[in-house]
Length: 495
Image (cartoon, rainbow, N blue to C red):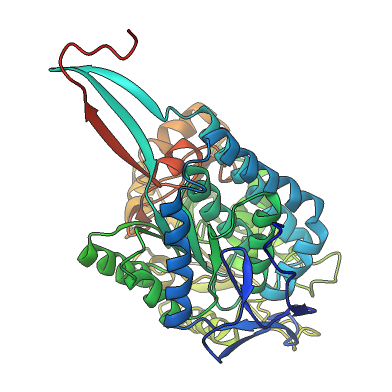
C-alpha cells in the first residue's frame, strides 16, 4: 500500500467508504449495498452504493491520473511487474480470498480456488508476459519512406463485471487494462462487491500509483452512469447478452470503444467412438460447473441416437456424484444459485422443458438440509429438440439438455444453430478428427475431450456471445490505440 493510502475502514467486511484512486474516501451516496450469502442467507458485509456523483469522482480521479502520465508513461516492463506481483499476492492470501469470494457467491472455497483463483493468477501473469514481450514501437517502410508505429493506452476504462466468478473476472479486466497503461474505474456486480475492494487494495500494495484504480459498487444505475460518462474512453463488460446490447448501443451513440463478453448456449458433441465411461465425468462437469452459472457451460449435449441411453446413464451417475453443500463442507462440489429469483427462474425453465415434451431423467430438487440457501440439484433432460427454450436460451443453472443426432453433419448443424457462439467441446477417441469437427463450429473457444480457458490464448464469442477478445496479446491489444507517424521522406531513424 502506498504511503498516501489509508487503511481499509472495515469491521469484518463492512466498508463505510469507497476505494477511489487507492485511497478510502467518504461516499456522496448514503445508500448501502448489503451482501448476504446465497448459501446460508447470512449477512456477510456491506459497502456504499456509489451514485452518479461518486462515479464522476472516480472517473475524474482516473482521468487526472491518466493525463499526468504517472502510469501510462511507466515502462511496460515496470507495469508488468506490478501486475505479476498481484498474482503473487493473491496466491499468498489465497485462503482468505477464497473464503471471502465463497461468502459472497456461495461456491465452496475449493471451487473458488480451482475455477477462480487459478485462472485469475494465470491471466495476470500472462498479461504481464504479453506486455513485456509486446512490440510497442516499430518502424515500417511505406510508400513515402519510414512510418513510426506506436501503441498507446486507450485512456480511462470503465470495467463492469458479473457475479458468477468475480475473482477471475476482475483480474481479467484489470490485468490487460493496467498492463496497457490505462486508468480503470471498476464496477463489480452488486452481489459480489466485497472481493473487488480487496483485490483493488492488492494492486495498490503491489505498487500501482495513486489515482489509477477505483472501485464503485452499485447496481444498474451506477453502471449506466459509468457507461455514459464522457471521460470514459472504453467500456469492458462481462454479463448478460441483454445488458451487453444496451451497453453496446450506448457506446455506439458516443463512438466509445467497448468489448463485450456475453452469454452462451454451448454444445458438447459426443461422437460415436467416445467411451461413455471415460468421458462421463468431465462431460457432465462442463455442463454443471459452478452450478451451471457459467457462460461457457456445455448445456447442450449432442449424442448419437444409438448410444444415447448408454451415455445418458453414465452422465446421470456422474451428476449424482456432484454433491451440493455449504461452503464449509469439504465434500461439497456444487454451491447455491446466486439469488432466490435466479432459482425460481431456473425452476421455471425446467417446468417449460417438461411441458414442451422433454423428459427429466434426472430431476432437480431443493436438497434437504440446505433450506437456508438457494440450492438446486442438477437436471438432465432427454427428448430435447433444438427449438425448445431449454435448448436455445441461457438458463444459467444446473440444467443439461441431451439432443439426439443421426450423422455428424447433423450434429455440427445443431451445434451451430444458436444465436450464441462462445464455447463448445467434442468428445472422441480420435483427437485429429476432433480438430476437424472444431473447425466447423462457429465459436470463439473449443475443447477436445475437455474444456478450459487458456489464459495466454484469445477468449471471446461469435454472434450474440460478444464483441472482442480477452486473454493473451489479443486481450492486451483491445486496450490500445495504434498511432502512425509519417516521417519526412529520406529520414532514417537509425542513422
